[in-house]
Length: 129
Image 1 (cartoon, rainbow, N blue to C red):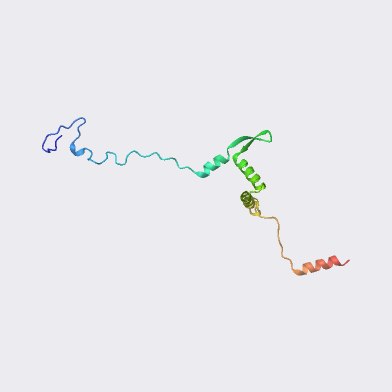
Image 2: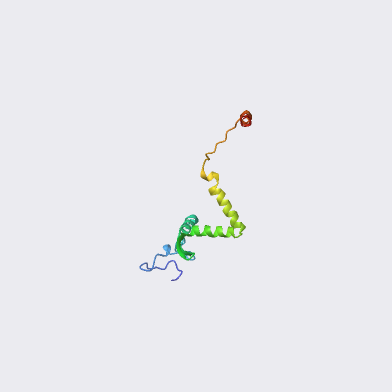
């Protein structure tokens, strides 16, 4: 092809009009093929799935089925008993959070304020035969 604009150019199969051709230095697909994006992962769901996975292990010569979460807590408790202070603090924190009075709900114990005369009368009644 020459650069002469007056020259007749035959348009046909494989020969598009010069006006509609791709520009030089410019891509024919500027946005390109879209990239495959990994699905959004929820760390909480993955952790829950792993924690609830069942494993068969041997304890004291017997096969036992346990959840991975249970195994983790048993190991943590064993480390705390053997002197690991970090594990002991973690267990103590979890115990106060999950086994404390707030976790169990309202207490059935009631406190009543009594006047001093009540106690004076009571001690006098005990002392007098």
